[in-house]
Image (cartoon, rainbow, N blue to C red; front, side):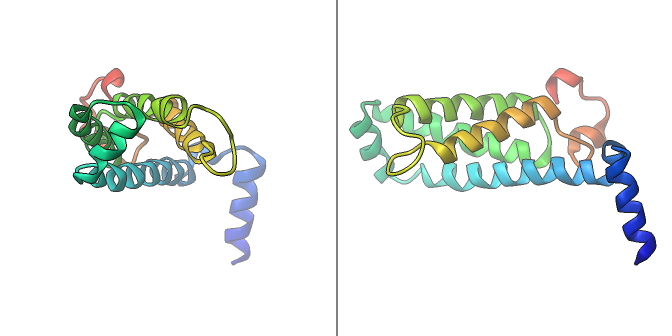
Length: 149
């Protein structure tokens, strides 16, 4: 136990987290969390009641399928770690639309606040910056160009 705590203290004090498995677990944790959110929300947007919401906010009903597919497919790709940066970019655009078009960026907190959307946007931008990490299909394949990861 003492040896384990000494190793953690060494990793934290010497900034060796980047070389350890903690970074890989962190990358995968962020990716899995964002992917789960978007897979759940994207699959729910195939429900016919979502078209009523779209008309309420002024979007055409035809946008139901593209929005649902963008969230669902991007979430799946982020989870498995393929085309991660492109998928996170698509989800960032979706979140910007949610913040500025749907919620009108009126209030950060409270009823109709966009604080959760802002956190999800920040996590998506983090995925763009960090890439898929080592726990991903992109890392296992090793032949996928960096810009497609």
